[in-house]
Amino acid sequence: MSGKIDWNTRLVPYTQVVDELKVKLRGMRKQFDIETKHSPIELVTGRVKPVQSLLDKAHRKNIPESDIEMVLQDIAGVRVVCQFVDDIYTIVDLVRSRDDFDVVEEKDYIAHKKDSGYRSYHIIISYPVQTIHGKKYVTAEIQIRTLAMNFWATNEHSLNYKYKGQIPSNIKARLKSAAEAAFKLDEEMAKIKDEVQEAQWVFRELKRPGQGM
Ligand code: 0O2
Image (tube, rainbow, N blue to C red):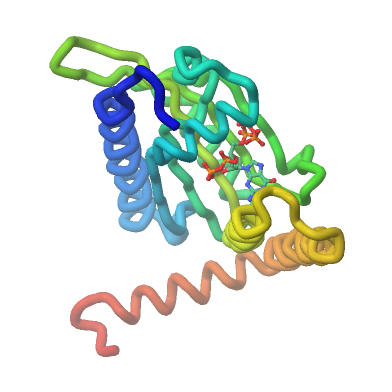
């Protein structure tokens, strides 16, 4: 249950941050599409954590409501999904090199996957956003992962929700082997990356206006 804080008002700058980050990351994707044969960005999504989910997470972690903004780093979250594992590190370097926000922390759940089997690269940033009350620094989380990692994480997330965090052990075991399979898929695709990219580029060129198809 919500306490004294008016979260609808408090979350407005977070919504703006998510919107701005989506524009910027999609802009990067567009630029790659025009200037290169292969964009390391497949898709970009984003969300502000719903209030109830925010309060539930704070409750689970014993965080007082007044400390939520200070402690929870993923109230504003954007996700960059890539085709190949290499692409993730291209995006990580690009994010690090930007001067419109600061990188606060990096969590490499690819080199160090979570016990659940979760893999992804997280970058926590401090983003200056202009509000009607002046500049506010908002913490946001950028999750960068492959399509295979995303498929696994989305399914595991749904199961976690369904079982309220208590996934039965037989399903947990299946999820672990699915995580291994997703890892293997990323490895195998990396081996034929050049072939795949060339084929996709030819296909894309064919679809350009005035090229038939
Ligand atoms: P939602 O619904 O995506 O917002 P914690 O959440 O306690 O594990 P922490 O310290 O808050 O971890 O930060 P971390 O590790 O960066 O994780 C934050 C987010 O990463 C999670 O947010 C998920 O989106 C994703 N994530 C982390 N671990 C897992 C996992 O094992 N499985 C899946 N599917 N996603 C994971 P929320 O708040 O859990 O959920």
